[in-house]
Structure formats: C-alpha cells, structure tokens
Length: 405
Image 1 (spheres, one colour):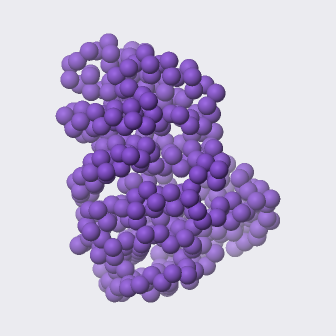
Image 2 (cartoon, helix red, strand yellow; image 1 turned 90 degrees about the vertical axis):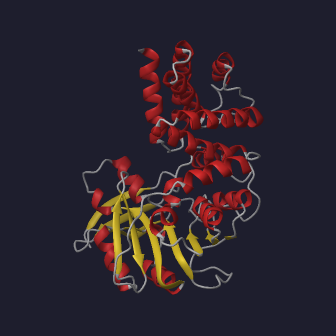
Image 3 (cartoon, one colour; image 1 turned 60 degrees about the horizontal axis):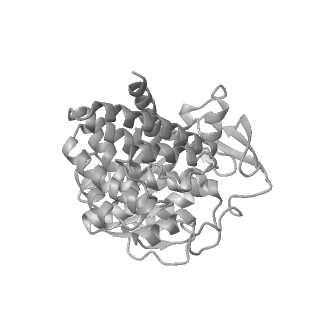
C-alpha cells in the first residue's frame, strides 16, 4: 500500500503513517510512533462520573452531545427507519450517549444492551437507566445472552485493529436475517489535497485505525457473512452500511416515525430532574417545531424549556434584561459551566414565535439580538475544544441577520 500521509495527534502526540489501498481506496495505519498519552490512558476507571474525573474541556464536549442533542437522529436510525418490525433485542456497540437504546426501550419495549468503556456511556446509563457493559466488543467479560435482532455501531469500526474479527463476532451475535447497522467516515471524501483540519478529523491520529471506502467496507462485510448491504451517505462525508445476515435482499428504508417526537416529549418530562438530558430532549423538539412551523407545539415546548431553565440554571426566558446582564458575567467562564448550551436556540425560537404570531415585534428583535450574542459565545466555547454544531451556527447567523435588519 503506498504512503498517503503522516499525521500527529494534537490530543495524544501520537505520530501515525497512513497508507492508501489502490484497490478499494480505504486508508489504514501501517506504523505508529507512540505519543506521551494514549487513548487508553486518557480513559478514567469505572465509577461515578464527577467533575474530578473529566477535564473542563471534556465535560463541555459531553454536554454538547447531551444538551444539544447531537447524534440523537443517528443513534435512533436503525430503530426508526430500518427495522421492520422494530427489534426485540438491540445491541449498541460503542453506545456513547445511548439514546438509540433508550428510544428503542421506551418506544418499542425492546430489550437493549450497550457496550462502551467510556465515561459518557456510564453517565448516560446511570441517568437514562439502560444496561451497560463496560468494555470493548467482542472482548467483554459479561455474556450477551440470546442473539440480537439488530446490532448497531455508530462511528466504531474505524477504531478497530481487527475489523474482520469484529464483524464475524457481530454476525455470530445476530439472529438469522438480523440487521447490522454501522456508520463510519468515508475515505472516498478525502485525498492528499484535502484541508489539514478535515484530514485530522477524518483520520483522527491516535484513535482511527482504518478509514474505509464504501467499496472496501462492503467487500469486508461480504467476507464476514453479510451478503446484502445498503449504503447511504450523509452530509458530513460519512456513510452508513445496513447489512443483513444470511439474506439475499438488501434492507429497505422507511420514513422516520412520529414516535421519535413522542419519545422526546415524554422523556423531556420524565428527565426534568436532569438539567442536561432534559435540555437535550427539549432542544430536539424545538428544532423540529421550528423547522415545521408548528407554533402551538413550539409554544408548549418553550414553556417546558422555561421551567427547565429556571429550575436548573436560574434563568427566566422572559427576563431579557437579566439574560443580557448574565452574558457579561460569563466572560471569564471559558467552558460555560453555568450556561445551558441550548440557550441561543431557545432565545431564537422565542423570537421566531413572536414574529410568526404577530406578537410584540420589538421584543422579537430583542430575542434575536440575544440569540446572536449568546450564539457567538457558545460557538466560540465549543470551537476551543474542537467541536462545532451546524444548527447552532445557522441559528446564530440567522439571528444576527434579523437583529441588524
């Protein structure tokens, strides 16, 4: 395999040489020069997640995933759009936030299991109540029990040293005709001329071992006993594979179900005691109702958000002067420890609701101004830890344009 690129991990100091397969276009690590801190060393031991076990930047990254609902749609993809009927037993490898497990459990009374060594998964399992095995698949001490109808692994296979062993173990853990759903970065979207920041994100030295092309992963899946594969590409340059064990027909898709919004509504109430998860569920509802112009349901959701903000953050959504004054007090808070990350979105939604219902237009513009200012604050905080949020960026830009018009 010819040499492709050498990258140094900003996080671990690891130097990795990536080589390019001329047959399938996948990109793989051939040689490692260890850094001063490995990903394994970066993982804290099992236990309760506290501020002492994660750095402020890591906590902000986890809050981003929870409070802004990132990956909610991806993690519920197999249950909402593919499995017919819904799965009876679902295994999520590298479950992270675990929303896919929580959704399947609540929407379909599905028996679920998550596998993940990380602190985000532990935090989520404790909060949401799904069963979690701390470890790596297939090397887990606890037995998995009966075969599964569906196994999913979102952004996992690129981390695996022996992907064939991983896929064969997944096949053995599925019922006949069971579904394997994966997502992974797409090697076809990068080349030597790709911007360094994009290369670092896709290849992620210190973490990613193989970045597959669709052709390369399809060939590997076929060898592992998954002859029927459907490929889908998303806007990030990643792709999904949906593969059936021992089936002659590829899996088919169905439109997303309204049950996902029902789930978010119910869980936003049930998780009202948790500042972060309640914010995440309310964020997903707010985005959906904004996109659909559903003003009555948006009004109800913002009322729930106002209660959440008052209870956990001491913020009154209707107190615009207080929200503006609070902005000045957060200047030294680099990681926004006392600020809910969805605040710009909720301010924008409040202003948009006033605009759409012919209410106080002066107040609407003031909400847009606040959304713009807070949006810039949150975007900058996320960027300093290497995160970005396209919805938040779009909201901030729209709010700014409206506020200055």
